[in-house]
Length: 180
Image (cartoon, rainbow, N blue to C red; front, top):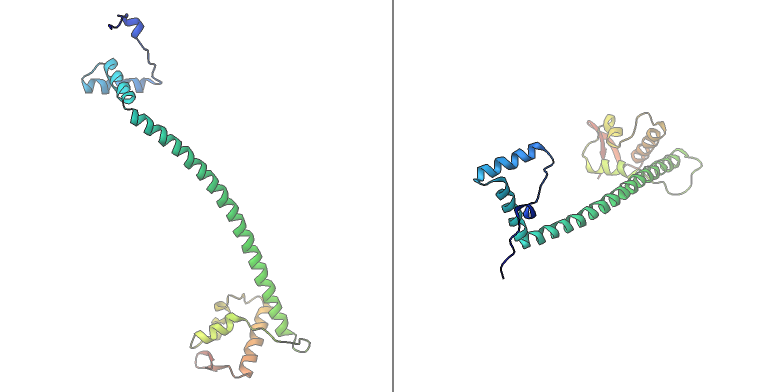
C-alpha cells in the first residue's frame, strides 16, 4: 500500500510558544544541533512519543507523586494534631507538678495538724545522695525552685531541718552532705 500524498498545508502543525524568550531558546538549540526548527521540534516530539517506556514511567512518576502529596498532607495533619496533644499534655503535666508541689509544701508546713506519712521532694534527696557536697546557696537553682516562691522555699527548708534531725544530712565543709 502506498501512502496518499498530501499537501504540506495538510501536514503542518503550528506550535505557539508562550514567550519570545522560549522561541529564541528553541531556535538557538536547533541551530546548535544543525537542524531547522521544524526538524528539531519533530525530533524532540518523536523521541518522546517513541519512548513508550519513558511515557509509562512518567505516568507512574506522576501517580506516585500524587500519592506522596496525599501522604504528605495526611502526615502534616497528624503532626498538627500530635503537636496540639503534646501542648495539652505539657500543660496538664505542669498543673500536676504544681499541685504535687503544693501538696508536699502543705504537708511539711502543717506540723501540728498533718497526720500520716510526709513525702519528701524526691529531687532533693536524689541531689543530696548523688553529689558529695551541695552548696546551700546553689540548692534552689539545682532544684529549679524560684527563690521568690516562699512556700516552696519554706518546704525545702523544713525538709532539710527534718533530714538534719534524722541524722541523714549534715553541714560539712563547703555545703550539705548526705550521710551514707
